[in-house]
Image (cartoon, rainbow, N blue to C red):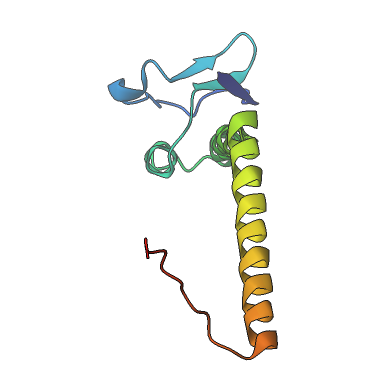
Length: 123
């Protein structure tokens, strides 16, 4: 995805490092600085160091924020329905088992005697 920020002109003599050739461009016709994809903090810092011109830095900051917002929004994905159902089923089973165990222990305490086991034997 491409993001753009208004920039009337590039600072005099500014050239972008070759490694940004596929990600960053200046569209003089539209007066926009255009960045493709997510801009890392390291990239932002490197590009900022190229010029102290406030308009250029403001455009870079806008691009940095725009690309970060896109990544952050993509991280908020809902659980897939099957995973959600499996989680709910596991939670219901866990509650049912705990409830059954609590009832069993309560019944044992009410009788006042420890549980006994009987062995079935052929005699």
